[in-house]
Image (cartoon, rainbow, N blue to C red; front, side, top):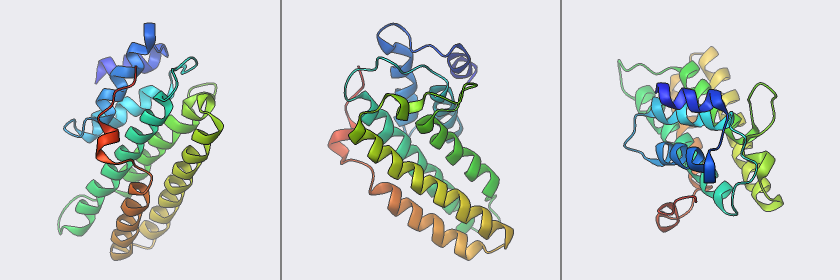
Length: 177
């Protein structure tokens, strides 16, 4: 975790984007703990992504989308299981981190995938941003009303909405260069 945080603090993509590639691998590996994957997304948002090769933005976007899906699924499980520790704040923080990896969010509030995406990629990224913002707002409102059943419904719908933005399994196997 400390190495991931250090990569973010340095803000460097590395020679031939090696650090971006490592963060991508951490984010997309669903065997990694969710907290580690979110930390990698947080580090990614702080890195200057200028000069990424063609196609890498799409792969990073897909891994971040899958991270958002997994985050919602985890919290949905927590919300729908009695005596589990559902946390609306934890969910919103994690989704905000994913959103900031897309929009940028370093000290200069620039960067992120959006800054280096093609016009077509920006449209897809904007769809992801919109879904994430909607989920964050709905969960905050429902949590304030203590409506756990409705939160479960929103999370289930969010998972379906985010999944519609992810590619088929065969597309997920590729690595950015």
